[in-house]
Amino acid sequence: MFFYLCIYKIIKTMETTINNVVHLTTQEFKDKVFDYEVEKEWKYKGELPAIIDFYANWCAPCKMVAVVLQELAAEYAGKVVVYKIDTEKEQELSAAFRISSIPSILFIPKNGQPQMAVGALPRASFEQAINEILLATN
Image (cartoon, rainbow, N blue to C red; front, side, top):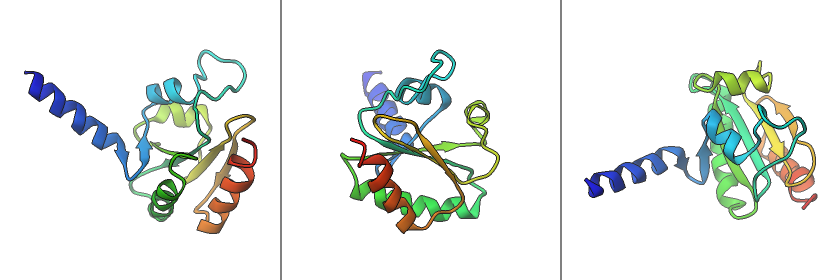
């Protein structure tokens, strides 16, 4: 029984973390990023600045952004964490952030207010946001 429990935990970890990109559920978002049901003002819970990609599996521009984010997650490992939220599965969370167009990208500095960008940003725009929004404020 213990063996099967260990295998189950390994599989669940592999499902939620792929290439340094972490897939979040609504509850995981509340635990790791921000509990919007409890807190009145923004207070980021994370240790590292974050990028959150609100996406859907059927979205072609989202797939292009996913490739860029996987590369950036590897390059900035230990400096920035990259999360993905499936808007089809996590509709409550998508509604809380008023996501009406995908991909929507939320840049969260360690301190300060998050900033939202909409659309398939080019790699250079991601790098600029990482350096000017996420890493410059640390």
